[in-house]
Length: 251
Figure 1 (cartoon, rainbow, N blue to C red):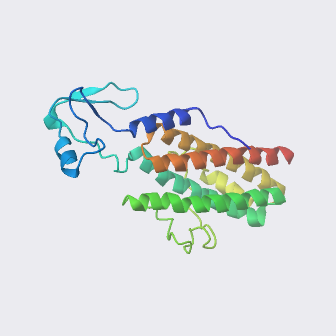
Figure 2: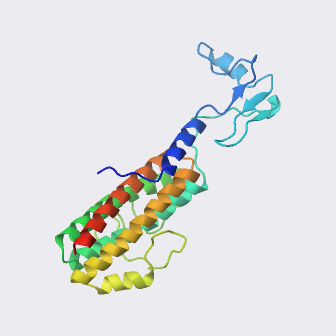
Figure 3: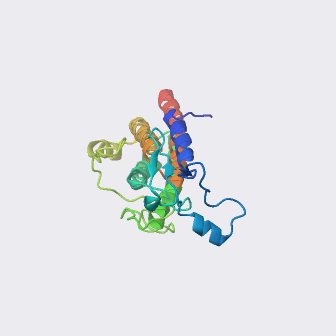
């Protein structure tokens, strides 16, 4: 099933690819550093321009001229990420962990096999995604949420490590789609057809929040890996929203 995310994701992808190109060009008459055929010494010597440099702005921003002494060569090999990327990854881990809790409840409480099946799929998919999200943080020496106790799958909160644990059931008002304490309590108290309906409604809301988070980072983040994660998560959860709604409509 093909699912289209909001058009802003395509805009963000094109913009980010343009920005990943060399971040500067020289005014005509000055040799550009790194031309084919230069030796290492030649490249080093040419890395500091002798004339003014025209440095393009980010997409939608004007170019500026930079004096030679203020010129800083672009390091295209350095990873680019900003606070929006870090916030997305950190918050999505918390978001996914709550989805694992919700999905685990379906094992004993759901009545319809379709509800159990999609809950199992959500648990497996989002559990695996937690690994990638936590690894992104660890690779950048950023704190990993405490609920992800181990990345090898053996922790009580880790995918494949038994049950998903029990969070604080807070409202998490800064994260779209997070289920509040009252909703979670109602879900935990329900069973059978009542659980099925509450679960599907809550998970649709939860998934919609994740899609919103993915769209936001695609327009405000800089990291290419985060873009890939956001695209995968957004597309996957948009598809699951349609499936969850189909099951709900059939109850």
